[in-house]
Length: 249
Image 1 (tube, rainbow, N blue to C red):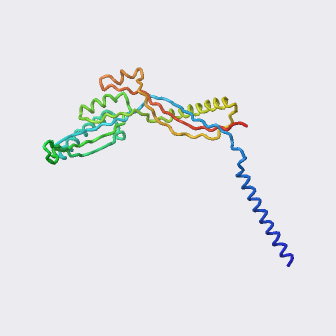
Image 2: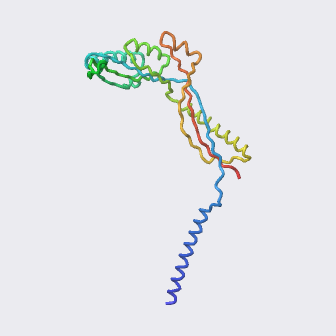
Image 3: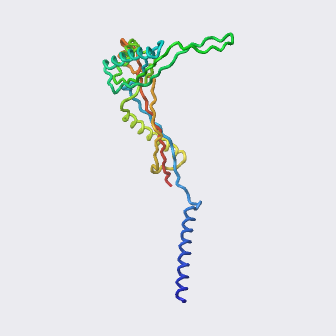
């Protein structure tokens, strides 16, 4: 009987010791006196520029007629001629995409100077058909715009200069951003009288293209001769990174 009581006493003592150890570990982990690691966090910015090698052109054909059928037929005829001319000019099927289509009634709103409540009068319909064109040979861009307008394009004209494969340029911008962050961190550490340790973390906020309105010498004559003048300029890709450094103790 005494041996059973002794075993129970030892078991209770062991459990109490285990709980005490857990409590002590928790208290140590939450010790407010423990210092957090000293760090320096800086933002670095990098930019790399490259001439565009592709343009995305927005073209639209808008036709008005008494009936929706007549407006659609007229629009279809003109757009078919425009698309055929674009293909003959070297634009591939994969670089042509319909970007918008609409059929809208057109109304005439009589004046109500005498206070009368006259309803609007339906006078016809308007059909608009837009196409997005990727132009990979920029030397043809002005000529494409010129011929498209001649064939009946009468709305649009938005142009976005871009790059088909900007990865190499973006990589250079990333390298420049990290180098900028390291230089900034060195200046801050020197000003604070401390030494930089290892890099703890690097995060990228993303990159964004930033077109620069700049005409490259030697291109102006080529792109403006006998067609709509086009200034391609350059595309700049900007990258921002956050870099955290440890401070040597």
